[in-house]
Amino acid sequence: MRLTEQTRYALRVMAYCAQFHPKIVRVSEIAQATGLTEYTIFKLLKVATKAGLIVSTRGRSGGIHLGLSPDVLSVGYVVRVFEPRFQKCGPADMFDDVSDNDDMIDQNANAAIGRGFNAFIGELDQIHISDMLKGVEQGQLQSEAV
Image 1 (cartoon, rainbow, N blue to C red):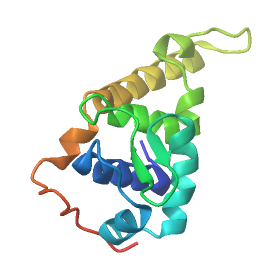
Image 2: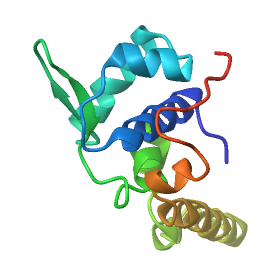
Image 3: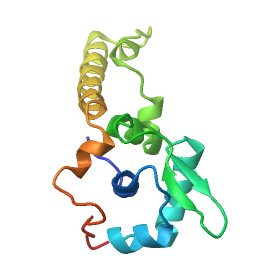
Image 4: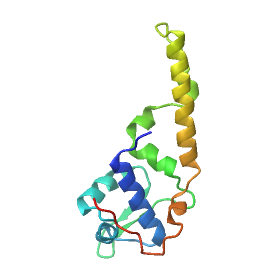
């Protein structure tokens, strides 16, 4: 399965926020630590705040923080939020819906894709944002060239 860069960036932002949870962090700090531009982060925040992944606070001491505990927020949930094609994809049993136009090969292909998708997203559901911080000291998220 291929994920968009936007989803990878969102996971980096969530991981950075998780390091300081429940404290508020500034977008400029995240940009500096992750190598993402502030513009990219603000684009991600539109989706993340609407989904409740991130809470934004305005004002002098404003910033953002995770809307859920990093021990509860799963990578699978973040992927579903940032990958619209996965939102529209149902579980394997929905792939089994038989149309009058489907032949047996189509039905079997749909079932196989459904099982594969469920295995993929099911594994991501077992990984929490806090798990992404293993081996990372607080405030020490390495930036990668973007």
